[in-house]
Image (cartoon, rainbow, N blue to C red; front, side):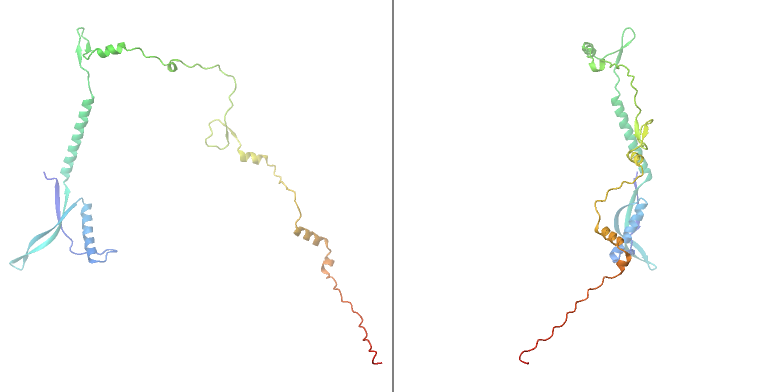
Length: 239
């Protein structure tokens, strides 16, 4: 039975323009690429390209031979695919059945005189089991721990910070660190003593203590002292 079907299509003879494809060779390759992808989308697998002769009619009574380029594709027949799948399923089922039969072992039995069935296996295993010493009981599994006397001390309920999502059920909510600081704040701003007075503050204090008139009146300028010119001395030879 044929498992594949074939399809032959003519090869492209002209190039196809595309973005970034400029040369004639690249455009021709683009045409073949488009054709192969279209056939693959339909399930056809590319096999090979062939150059085959084609006898064609020429004129009224004549004929000529032309060579044609074709592309050959193939795909699996649907019936063949189903047969292959059913065969694989049957083989897998046979393997599973063989494994189950190999693991399922039933001991042979024989009927005794009193009508009961007894195993026909060797009794040496049973004798060895009966002669085996009893198992020693481990002290940690044999002793049962006892509870101490009950205590009357009350157990304090658990506490948790208010708003904790992981707090256990029934826990008493207590304020956190930030909440405790806000509760202890009395609203009075703390003042710190001034260590010293700056020069700017001293200058402002001096201006405030000076009267306005004294500050506006300019200080008198000191006038230069005039000295009496000395008379010229007479020459004794002139007299």
